[in-house]
Structure formats: C-alpha cells, structure tokens
Image 1 (tube, rainbow over the protein chains, first blue to last red):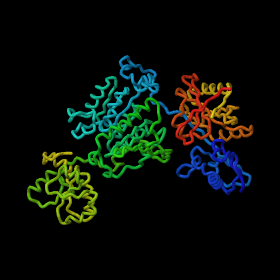
Image 2: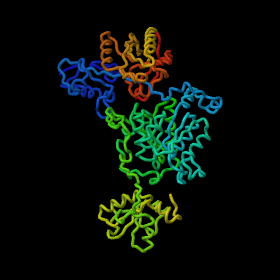
Image 3: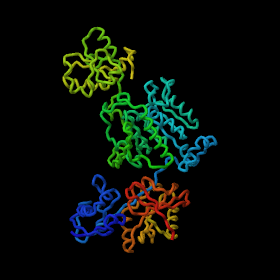
Image 4: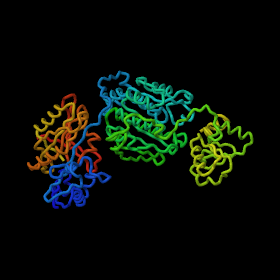
Length: 485
Length: 141
C-alpha cells in the first residue's frame, strides 16, 4: 500500500527537509521501519535502546493514535496518512523546602557563611534554603562521618542521626567523626558532639535505634532528604521502600574495597533502588567492610558526593544524580556514569506497585537474625564454640582445624596447627582433607565458615563443625594475644 | 538561531502565565522560518495535560493537542516552531526534566512567574548531542 508519512518540523533536518515522505507497507510497523531504513538518523529520536517507540513519540493513522488501534500491527490502506506527533513535556525540579522564606540569618551566621553568600548561585536565599532543610543521616559510620561534618559546616538547619552502634577501635581508620578518645562511646554521642563543635546552629536529633519496619516511617516522615549511609542490604531496602512510600529523595552511596557508587533515588522523578536491584544478592555473597575490607579514605569521597547531592537538592540547583549512577574506581582514579531508568514494573515505585507497606527486610534478604538460645548446643548441631574447641583440644581430641580465610588474613593471625584453604578454592581442594576426620572450620567471624561447612556436608563430609564467632571470638574468649582485625 | 515575537505575543504569554499561576501554563508557537530565523505569527494556548496535583511543576501538551495544532499550522502554511511554558516561583532556566524530554529544533520559551508577577522570559534550543540547552535570543518585533 502506498501512503504518506507526515513528519513534525523537529525531525525534518534528518530527512533532507522533507515534511512528507512516500512509503509502502501493509501495516504501521512496516511503514515506520521503512522510514527509519531510509533515514537512519531518525532512529535515536523515535526508538529507545530496547527498540520500542519512545514514550513521547506518538503515531497517528489518519486521525487516530495507533495505541488505540493495533499499535504497529495496525493495517493500512492506499492513501492513508501516518503522522508522527510529539508529546511535549517539561517542568521544573521541585524544591523540597518552600518554608525557606521565613528563615532568618543572624549577623553571626552571615559572617560564618560569607563564602556561600557571595556566590550568586547560593546567596542569602540559598543559605536560607539550607537552614530550612532537614536531612536524616542513616548511619554515622564510614559514610555518615564526612556527611555529618560537611553538612554541619554548610549550615543545614537540622540533622537527624540514626545509629545504635558503639565506636570500635577498627572504625577509626575511616570514621573520622570519631576520635581515639571516643572508643567505647555510643556513635550518636560522639557524632553529635563533633557536629555541634563545628556549627552550634545545627539542630541535631539522635535516634538510638536500629531502623526497622515498625519505626522507619515515623522517623523519616519529618525530614526533607534521607541520606543512606548504611552497611547492610536489609536496611538499604527498608530505607528505599520507606522513601518511596513517603515521597522523599534518598541519596545513596556505597563503598567496597577500592570502589564506590552514588546516586539519588527519588521515585517521583526517576528510578528507586529496587529499579536498579530488584532483588538482594544471596546472603554472604557480598561481604561487609569487616569481611572484605575498605580503603579508609574511600568513604570520604563517596560521602562527599552524597553531601553534594543533598546540598543541591536543598538549593534546587544543578543537575542531580537522579537517574544516574556514578561509579568510582579509586585505584584507576576513574569516574564512570551509567544511566538508570525507572522500571515501570517496579514493585514499589512502578505503575502498579504491590509493595504498599514496609515488609520484613531480613527475610527478604535471606538473613536470619541470630537466635538467642538457652539450650546447650548439641553434638549434631554442626557448630562448636571456641570454649568447647579449646577443651576438646586440651583433652587431646584428634581434630583438623580448617581455616577458610584469605592468605593475607592468615598472615595477620591464625590458630595453631590450622590448614588454610580459602573458601573460593575449597570446592576444588576439598579432597586434600579426609572425610573420616573430625574437622572444625573457621573464618574471621563465622559467616564464610558456615558456607564452607554446608559445601563440605554436601560433598559427604559428615564430621564437620563450624566455629561460631570465628577467630574473632577465639581471640576474645580464649587467646587475647591474637591481634584482632 | 533567533526567534522573533511581536509585543502582543509576549503579552499573551505573560497573561497566560499569570492566569494559571501557581500552576504551569503551556502553549505552542506557530509561524514560519525565514532567513534562518523563527518568526512567530500565532500563539496557541494549550491545556496542561498533566494531572491536577502535578501542575505546579510539570506540563504536558498531549499528542491530540499537538496533532490538532499541527493541522491548523499546515492549513495556514505555517509550522509549529516551538512551545512556551511557565516556571512558577522558580528561575526561567530549563531543568534536567526539560532536557530529558526535549525535541531537537523547537524553540522552548520559558517564563518565570514569581508570586503572580511575571519576571524573565528566556528561550532555549536542544543541542545537537542532547547534552544541554543552547540559549536562543528573543527578538521583539
């Protein structure tokens, strides 16, 4: 069938200035393909990467939008006219703190923030916006530390801090808001103190709890921006879902060894965390900082990227990371960017959400919380405590001790007479061990060794036990001379 | 490229922005291209097709409106040269959202309306690689 395709003026420069093109085809799909074959530059404007017609491109057959007919299978007849019609959309980024107009800056504050005020992009209005903004920091650890310090310095009006942890010696390598004198203190106390020392104008509110499904909505509701500085997947998903339900921007950052990621998840404007990662990784696959390690300076950069995005949201300026994922490789000193798209089928923020309440995130992530047990562990529970192991060794029991950590960990500290087979090599090297022997498997904290025990049981090793708490607990309970790391 | 608008066009756009405040107004610019300049001959008001609750910071000109406007333009030997919309209480600068949804060639006129009073009017065109908006000069004739 011979027919005409009418093009909007916006695309004519790609068709040699023709606004009418004669083409043949038996249905709309065939005609459009013919058009794109003749003028290949039209492709990126008409189709997205998945080969589908872009949202804002509409195709009309005579007087009807083909979406109400048969889409690309709508059949055409001689003399029909197909029109390509743009939808035109736009608008502004919503600012999150419209109450800024009522804010006042004291003479003191004006002097303090002078380096902000003299920049036209900030000015008095911008600084008032910062003062009118309430930001919630989830976690005052690696990421929360630089966030707290810099956001306080910038003059954010209110900072909420959520953390139930206590400062540990090993935190000091990167959690710069805490000092040596703070070891043993609750992180909230230490963080609040440093924040107020930098800027007493900041209102600090502390939440000495673990964020959970039964308290998250209440806590987050009062804030304008949520900044995720957590270190575990259940909390990440919890924060994401709560922010989607409450319509709050979620400034995301994560770190691992030498790499970091950052983005802003704001369901109203773009994708949420679940659009990117609909399902959590199997438990134990992605090690925590304690297990995998992290370059101490890394959370500094990522935390500051998060702080930058939070400040930009407060000021309503600049191009945010909504819909963009920044990937940082410290060793290569390279930044990469991936475009993120909202998933229309996302269970939380999509067109037909099925998650309309907060769920059990530990279950979702496959993490079963440690159960308190008053019962003595029986012989066939597959586990052995350090105390039990010590007495077994003292009584001369024949045991093989298998260490499944990495060689560089083994160098830091190891149990006497232990054999090292890193977990990754275990499946291929299991046969170096004797199935008849009584074997106790350990790692640093008990996670990897639990996996190892499972693998070995499946391979026919019936006398394997996991050392609960790993070499860490051995160090605490049996041999304090062992360096903990 | 440059865009030429008559005084009455500028007043029409400002009136529309004031009337819809605090919601975003939107409309089409019809005219002809002559000597590499966009010359606007007629302004068509459009209904903001976004849902009520979103109209304070979002606008949408539906494909039906666009189709009908293109027909009107064609019958009068004109083209749709671009669009105008307002930014209530914010600067007349294109946002990331504007950038993500822009088409090449068209002139995007933005009017800032703060607290019911019209402020600056600017005009923008999508760059060739879609990375940014280029400033287009508005010439009053």
